[in-house]
Length: 376
Figure 1 (tube, helix red, strand yellow):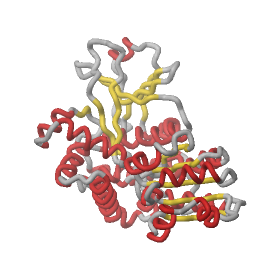
Figure 2 (cartoon, rainbow, N blue to C red):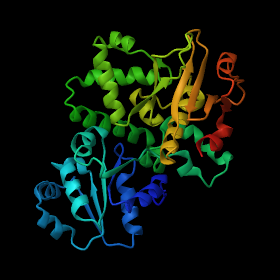
Figure 3 (cartoon, rainbow, N blue to C red):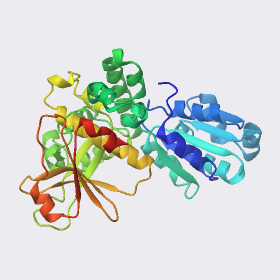
């Protein structure tokens, strides 16, 4: 598992020779450092690895002159700066390296779209390629396995998710997930934006966890939390930028009977969601097994679509009469619709209300037996 090659590895190799800074972002513990170390080990070029976690590196790089940078980089042709957001003036630093060291391939990693966007993207306009790294995908873990093996492992992932440390240490998965959730939710999110009401964030996360995969009303959440709707929206935005959750919009074509304003919220990782509500019961004992399967499938699909640079937009669909489709993907020429069913004995059919309005759309039921078809 430690030598598992990530899908993002191929994309990084492709973009490294593009004479731009490659910025790799993702939540803590998804394997960014492991990935860049693999790149260094497999590179035929001399490489220099620096981490912004070290105070000495922070001090040197935040004030280094061009002459000092030349001395530091020396004859290295691959430069990796890990946790670059910890370095003052990081964006200007990367810009100077890109502009003045044309033969040096530059990779910078960061743990938050919040800090990265504030410190780096503006100075690097036109000089960087942005890539995301997520927890493992089903394809990365089981691309050489058959569907029987995948289904045997499915109950674990539905409850405990796909973070690398969790997948390699299943015995301690519950404890590790609790620690991971508290570390990157509270150590990072609260500090990044100086949130002074951690109990509000905690309550919001629990509400989102219990409503996972359901339509979410900001007004209802605000009423339950006794805060303004704008506050709820800003907190959810922070959680998106911290790679905790993502939103799906409702698909509509100005049909009067279609929902248009509500959104669904999903978690990037099932294990983090279950840690938030402290529920690690086996999947066969849970009422939310279907919701967990839907969340896992949609999150996995989002990872692969981004890695493959697929030009598709994700949605859900529902009418005012509660007729719905779990998941849609819209491209310039095609509308694809999917329903998820975890139970192989449960019968699921597409609502005729959708097919009548969008007869050109493809429709597919996704069960555990269809995982390779959907996620590969």
